[in-house]
Image 1: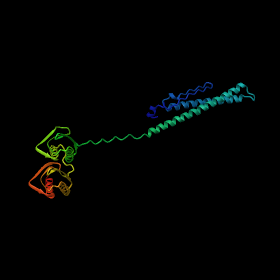
Image 2: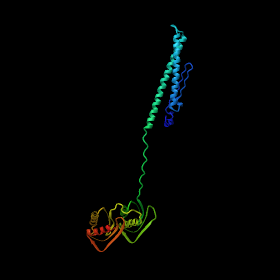
Image 3: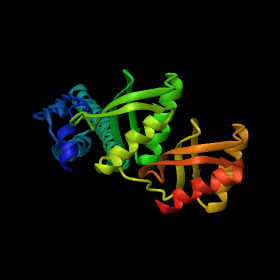
Image 4: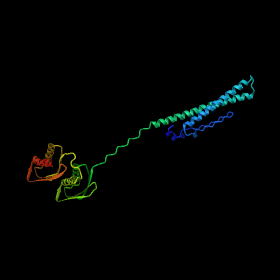
Length: 296
């Protein structure tokens, strides 16, 4: 019997059988509830069977002697002795059947418990560690409006900053304070104004220059800032895609001419491109913008 079944100790399973059989000098007292394992239980039953068999043999011998000594008209004393022996024999047979049934029930119960233990499900596998969020945390203020951004790279940071400006209706700013991952606060100011998303471009470019965030990990071609004070956010994977997006932007905003392009290029640096005259039409404006993207 293994250690687990010893722990169970059969105390919750074992019956208590108390048998008294008196015949001559025979007295059997079996209390299975006191045993701690099945081996002791079986040993006791074997001992009981041996005693029973010996007693039966004795009874049979006595019965044969009585029958041999009997006459056609046996006396009453002999009749009573024969009847008593037959009664004891029947009682012992009854005890044998009862104990055999109880032992059988006990064995079946133990087998059932062993099967349950053997069929227990395997331990749950050790869960894999949950990947940590490696995004950088930016907290600070733009024009006294608190912000908190989480971003993987400069492109994502600009996009979240742009949405913040739009949500808070910030059209211009001249001061930014920010901290990355709760470290030292950095202050940015300008003598004039950053218009629309220019402030986001300044924030991102400064963080990239200080290696506080990765620059454009997806290697896209991008222009994020303003063209003629109109917020622009062009992200593309090819020259033709960039030009299509830029022309669409100019047409949607009804820009017939422009003299300044200011913003974050390729998620790395800010540019401030101006001209003494004008760039006319979508194609000319966008070719100037594309040149800045290619050069940076």
